[in-house]
Length: 398
Image (tube, rainbow, N blue to C red; front, side, top):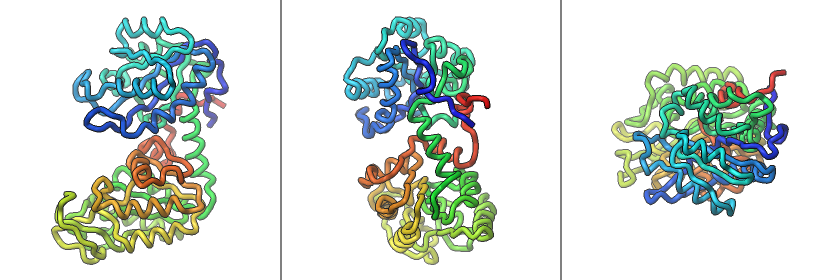
């Protein structure tokens, strides 16, 4: 598998369409609270500016229910790009109307046009060939630099690529870096290789767990998904989040780990509360003593200590998913302690997924991580061994 990369194609003086991932968190006043995804795209954008390209940028943002809902406009992104690049950013009010196509055609070398939120058009998620063709008509070259959406066969990711030959489409610097990093981590990790898997549900991470077990030396399971495993072992977990239908799968994963000699760690204690509420009464209990109508919302201090010890000899750590409801201070201690343990290790540390990336930013550990991926679902699918639709479109046939 050889990926066509931006540095290997001729883009000099051409019109370039760059699919970015500007799906950034914003507060209620439409202020961007974390611009990491925008900053991550700057290397590719600047390279195109230096090569006298005229540049069309496109991204989705959130999940707008109504077309042109102002809450989902990319205008704040245009403003932040202006600040970071120190140049004017033209903003297209629409995506593929004639006036937008004319704006794209009239761009001079070094000028940048940002299209409005791609998801304002139903053709994006439906991978509508007509919509994809209109997007493609704006440029001579297509660059995908949006790792976070490359697992989706959407019009601006997969459909558009069909309109360019392999000399006129490529992976941007960010996408290429992500693919190489995950390929290296999964296929040639320095051992011991430890994976931390958290988040709320087993269902979204089942395939990844199956794929990780034969590759890792240790696997640490926390977050809401741990309760499906604990229930599978016969523990009373009260009202904690459990996916009953996946209990047999949880048992199979634990059995497989045992067979392969992989050490699988589960919480030994939790912070339980009467309700999913930051004001709810909470207490610290062992997993054998979760009260019947209570729910576990964070790993407890003994588990945080256990996980920290398990990470101590690691040479590679792959982390996807928080250990509890970290958005509520009362249930953030476990995730914070694990974050500090990962940050202070001497291992190559790879953080995947929006929630986990947000968590290490909040804990102040961001700079200590080797690599923070911009895509959660995409990184999981790479771990599952899948070829992402957005990446498949950029492969050179050998």
